Image (cartoon, rainbow, N blue to C red; front, side, top):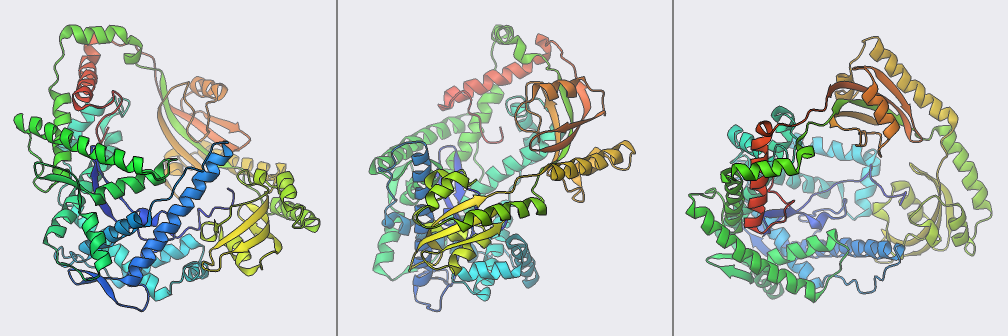
Length: 617
């Protein structure tokens, strides 16, 4: 929108909820959909406990706060969907909010899972020091643009410094607990190499093992640690002492644990259903509906039947699930291992391999590719450019009033998301998601006032404060006119000189491309290393495909430096190596084809789409 606060956002605790669905487990913290919602453990002075989990208390104030925060986040998500649909000319009247009862169930499960982890710290011998908390606080100050901005942000949410610091302490402790649980089972070198051979071409374009190893290792470990954590919480809940005295909360708890699908001792509960429901709600353009809930219930039942059938087949060929996994995680492990078994053991006939080779010869040919680097700087408005924008905004401000504000916004505003709507940011704008200068100006203004020009990183804003929410100081009805600075030729020449000076250093062998790409002291917006680039692909860091530039880069000598200026910035490029075109021979690609056919066979056996491969692919 042009005023959303990305760089200054304070990223707060994300609470964990574990749920099994499809072929993987989801861990998410939708309660922190809005980046600066606090996981306010023990927030408020009231200490009435509605739930006790292994002596860890969940207070009514804490529960109510999280329910309201989640409700506000989802309402903002719904509003964004409605705006997007309106911009496309689509009807959004049928989008419905998720019922409050479900939000309460979801929140209760989040808080219980969190306390299950916190109460495990002693058993896992996990501690957090004061210096670790202080270090994290310093990071938040930097993200917010200084301690004063940070304090202003948390106070606007109703939190004191001490309460926030206690929250961060718990956040860091939970992270350490997660890391400790994840460390119990890491993938070894043999697993990595097997996975690499399996997905060498399907996912990694045939790139060397050492090059893709870090990415592959991270993917496999993340998958494994997710399931480890899920199973750990499942087992911790089984052993936990959970005391609920409040009748309303007890009812919610019973609903959470009610069975959605069950077979052979495995089950999905309402908690799993709620998790998937909220995940879909925030990641798709759909709203809530009873039909959606019913479809999810049916999909859980179908998936459970499928997973149990796959587990039986896996056991029949001698596959064993990891002993740490329980419940749905155990079924997921069987499923993944059986999929890998199907790929690895598939043995098509020699004729089938030859037929595939002959039908797709072009695919197996070695393409002409290059590797290299791109370094450059985007054009950014200078102080002089901002001053010119300020003068323009001041002139517009002189003749702007309530009656003509919408027309002025349509005529002058450079915010594409609001200009065509007369500058409107919506009936209930969440100020905490906007840049602090904008939010502060709205907070300081009276209803009905037009204030500005207000400077932000995007330019200058003329703001019409049309209404404020009496219950929430961070919600207001506002419109704005954004005047962005025009980047002058003088500014562009300064950027070109900065990049040219770097080129001189490269030519004089004072610095290498590798050091520029890796070292922070070379502060360029674009620092990209690329490999396996073909002529028809966009050059990383440059953007969309540029045939003329690609032809020049391919035709250049190895290590020759090319200059490239565009409307967006100024760049240097070099080609460090080139692989020429080579026609494939059947014997050289036979194993690649076997794996390719094996993946197709496994997908068919597992009921997956042809382009769908397992984690790590």
